[in-house]
Image 1 (cartoon, rainbow, N blue to C red):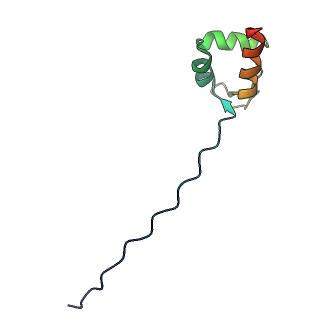
Image 2 (image 1 turned 45 degrees about the vertical axis):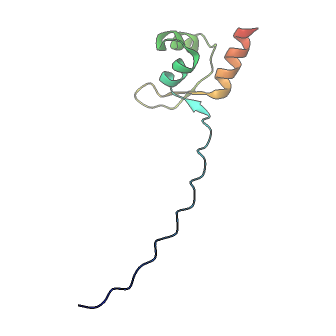
Image 3 (image 1 turned 90 degrees about the vertical axis):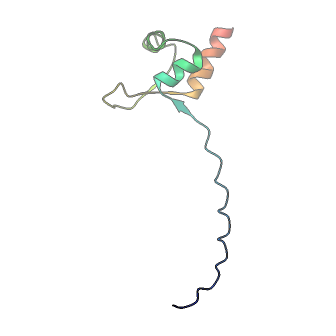
Length: 78
């Protein structure tokens, strides 16, 4: 049987890049962020108080930009 050469360990992998900041959220995530129920959040969306992006997906297809959540909170805090 041939003699095996000792191997050196592989160098460590480079660190992963930090995750990109979230720019938009689902209705479920946004309701948790705002501390509201999904029904209340959907009512605010329907009333035009929170701007959304409709994706056309079958399951509601709504994403809520972080800027819309920030704008809503600023208006409500005033």
